[in-house]
Length: 308
Image (tube, rainbow, N blue to C red; front, side, top):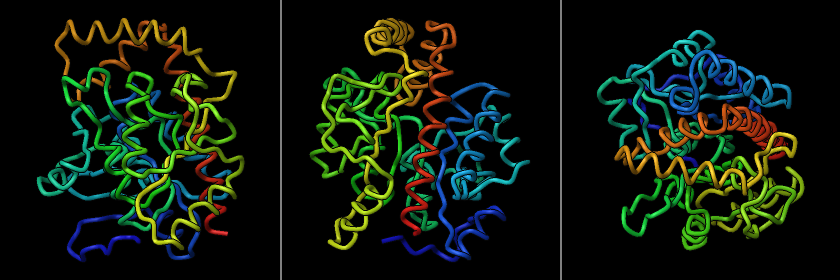
């Protein structure tokens, strides 16, 4: 059930999202760390505009979520999106610090967890992203586990992604999701994907072949009073993937570089993604954009099915 908004919470809807809420139109939430921390300007604004256009083409409304100078924005106007894309000092906010950004009137880009929280507050049921965070490699020593997994267990939003980021320990990530009771559904495949690659070497816990089937599954969960979110893993299109064996070589080298440079905490993922971009000579970014666009398309189709 969607949480009740406090009347004193500073929240702003874009004109498009506000109108969509009034008429009960399908809406798809989008995170903003991919804009501020995922790729440089102007590629980030081109990607953001492309993803929003894809969602509109499927009959849904995009709602990019961010905290701008202390106000939680659900949906950004074109000029706000452009300004965010050029921001160099945005906080990367998750469950622990999204309220801090609001309280301190800061600008913050939302991670998967923070975007889910905001989407739930706004009554948005579907969210498209690139890949979720999870259990980091070596977590048995570092205890580095993303808040995304806990959010999936508690917040009732369908998250469409290309699997867990391949830099993570994917088997342990799936174990945590199973323990927390989060349904993990791969769209159209029995193989769980690994972000840049269509397969991870692991079987998917569940598989469904249509947006309508995913919407029906969620409807039954709600009828039974089962709370928490659902993870939809959508394999990157075959023409855009980097095969798993090839990616593992790049990831191993990037992890070695991160350890050598003593990178930790929230800095790990941006560092690894930037290093992998260099190691793959830009191929990883092209694949990243392709999978985000692919996820946006599926998320919009699911949102339309839910609304219908």
